[in-house]
Amino acid sequence: MILTLTLNPSVDYTMFVPTLHANDANRVQRVEVDAGGKGLNVSRVASQLDASTFALGFSGGPAGNFVVSVLEGEGVPTHFVRIQGETRTNFSVEESERNAPPTTLNAKGPTVHEEEWQEFLQIYEAKLAAAEWVVMAGSIPPGTPIDAYAVLTQMAHEAGKRVMVDADGPAMMHAMQARPHLIKPNREEAGRLLGREIATTEDAAQAATDLLPMLHNHSGVVLLSLGKEGAVMATRSGLWRAESPDIEPKSTVGSGDSMVAGFLASIVRGDPHEVALQWGSAAGAATATTDGTRLGQKKVIELLFDDVRVHRLR
Image 1 (cartoon, rainbow, N blue to C red):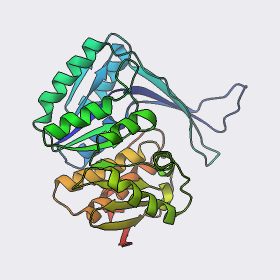
Image 2: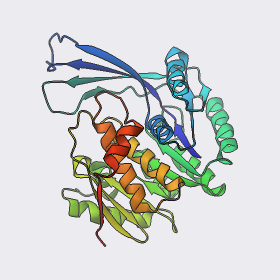
Image 3: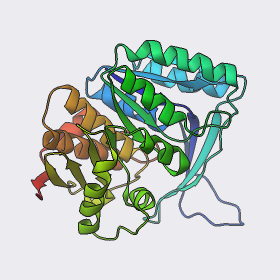
Image 4: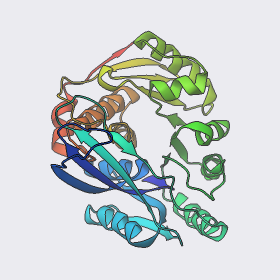
């Protein structure tokens, strides 16, 4: 079972306009509302691929109820600790006449109180027994310890579970000290971890190789996503490159989370890492073909699987 942790979920509003004009009135063509959160996305796509998954997190107020209802409507089992604050709401603007990333406004999230954090830890510890992988992804809300991901990773280690972390900034730095098994940075996040620019595919391959010793001693994996250029993967047994299928991308929102879901769904089936990389790349590409916050669907992922080219670099 893939257990996902989303400490700071959201309700995501995406507004579609022809072109965004700053400091002026804009006519919105349509609005989409969805549940947001990196861990939630992993569970939703993993469920599409028939992997057993469970989503754990915090929720507060009507916004939190909406997030839970979206997952339950998709058949994803959940347990969200109720908090006093209101689950955050994020806004994005996508421009139909420009091939550009969306403009996003992300709230910091509600404050999680100590007793709420302790309740989460108790539920998490109980859920660990059934987990094969634990996915910790996204930002950490106010009130939770800055080393929350390190604490949660250590608990998973003690329970004999494998851990994937997808975060940025101090939260990720602390998580790395606990040595997770799998990380999936993009080139900018990997650059921040290593303190250098990653400009080329060759740079990315070297970065993945350099990050590998920072992970778990025996089974570390680095997935370094490169957007339309694909991804590189470093493991103890080698280095691989995946070339993305030829698609017309509409939005990259959720593509990285989908890659994680496709990769882990394949791993828990017993596939080798290079096959899992192919599934992860197909899932990420499938989500990139959707607009707004929509995620890739199983049929599209399966169609794109054979179009992903994976080859060994060394």
